[in-house]
Length: 291
Image 1 (tube, rainbow, N blue to C red):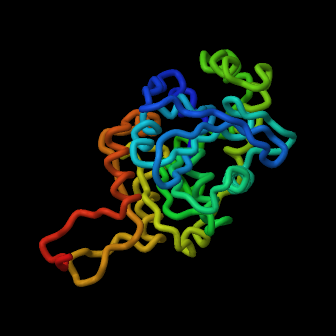
Image 2 (spheres, rainbow, N blue to C red; image 1 turned 60 degrees about the vertical axis):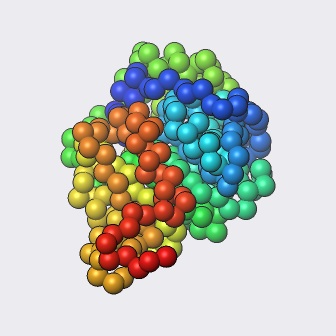
Image 3 (cartoon, rainbow, N blue to C red; image 1 turned 180 degrees about the horizontal axis):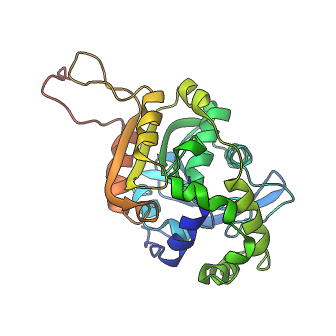
């Protein structure tokens, strides 16, 4: 998931939005008492894209336009982020997941593939847990399912977080350019600090999931490599191939020389993992049965 310290770095060096094949169509829809902003681009099977904390649609960069070449992409902005209004309610992963489910109902999506990054990955994971009927396949980049899986130095920083630490950051001024309430940044920071402190222990829920999941992590991400591998095993992965059994429905991709903030900055590599997963394409080994 998206940890607050790393969000600061990411937004200072966010990739520039890519030029899509056609200009995305933006709109707003009422979702759980907020006016949620979203954009639709591309054609094909529906794919919902979920951004990280403090981010918005443009800051997801070129991955959206790449996915829109073969999918109809619905990119939304979460509570208090981008052009979506805030409401008197905490930002929690269950709340975010319920918002996505309500959004899908409001725009007529009975089921879709989902790609989420960081906080959006946590929301996507909870969406598949709480509303499995809504999710076809789930791709998540930089996700954590248990607070114990975070790198120790980031866990140690969470209790030190204060709203004042973020108010003079350059991205605080960027927030005002799109925000429904330009003065709402301090309240958003307060809610996201509270999100960092929310209990998280989802192992049993992850183990019970039936949704195919693509896990993407940097080899220097906010979660430890051991945590990502443990999650992959909870999803049924990690066994030996070439032994007469089909590969698991879920997959694990580890990006080399990649920190948390560098994950979303590699759209070509992300697309090379996400697209085959969504299409059900896998490399063939020498012992694979002929088609």
